[in-house]
Amino acid sequence: MTDYRPDYHPQPPPVPWQAPPVAPWHTPPPPAGSLPARPRRRTLVVAVAVAIVLIAGLGIGLGVGLLTRGGPASRSPGSSTQTSAAARALYNQTLAATRGAAGVHYVSVSTSANVTQKTVGDATQDGGGQLITLNSTYGNEAFTLRLVGGTVYFQGNVPAVEDQLGVPSAGAAGVQGKWVSVTSSDGPYSILQPGITVAEQANELAMVPRSTSQVTAADGSRATRISGTITSQQGDSGTGYLDVAPASHLPISQASTVSAGAVTTTTTVTFTGWGTAVPPAAPATSVAWSTLGASPPPNGYGSGGSSQSPPATPAV
Image 1 (cartoon, rainbow, N blue to C red):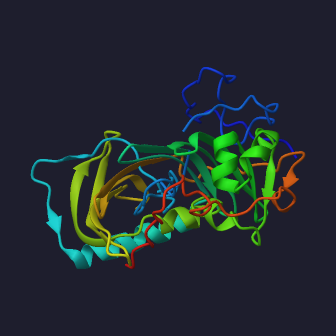
Image 2 (image 1 turned 90 degrees about the vertical axis):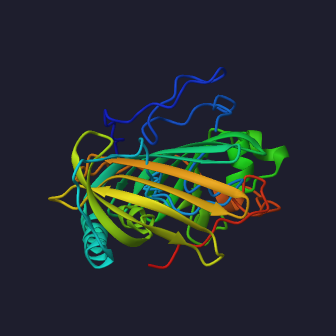
């Protein structure tokens, strides 16, 4: 099977000791020791609690995995506002349109305290891929995920191998740069898999819709903004909005601000290329996670070394 090489992937910034970065799932594994020590992904599942994203994200995080990016859209003069019944109806149409799409490209950025996580991804109906960078107590993490046939393939640098896979520090250097297959029965799967598919990206759009208004989106297009609230089972609360295309009801961008105790997390996600499926290919060779002698890190897989757990997806 040949890899796809779409032209629209934004490239992550280069780092001092790495070859130029490439799109998430379109390069052969670099030799051991060549992956960068840069930041990681998803719903800011590490270091601090994250409310929603996309997804993924995108990234969309948005955990949570549909993700948002771009600045807030501007309100158009004279734009009308409708209340929750209309907002909920449009929101449900948006979820249905998102889940039914063949694919989407997204970029998500989440910031909380001194932690920043960026996810660049492509989602399809049954798979997809993500390039995630973030800073954690393990160091600057950088890793790529591919979901193919229900298996997640992981490739990352030493900090990411330790945090995301639970490989002891003594063995992490030997896993760096190698593709690792993670199946549904493996410990890290439930942390790595969410947010990769189109349906998972829809899950990351979770909010309680309150109103709609007509706006000019960050990309300059006309959009309908769904504004609402976010409340997790742990009591974390915040607000967010989702800008959608008037005709297709597909998301253009998403933004949220959520507080968990003294920690506030802001997430932005942008979506492009709706309907364009970019299925990833499984790596030619990979190592099974079950053979690595890994175990859960002290605060869980993908915790970034933090004792905080990510909040549950809010009920809508």
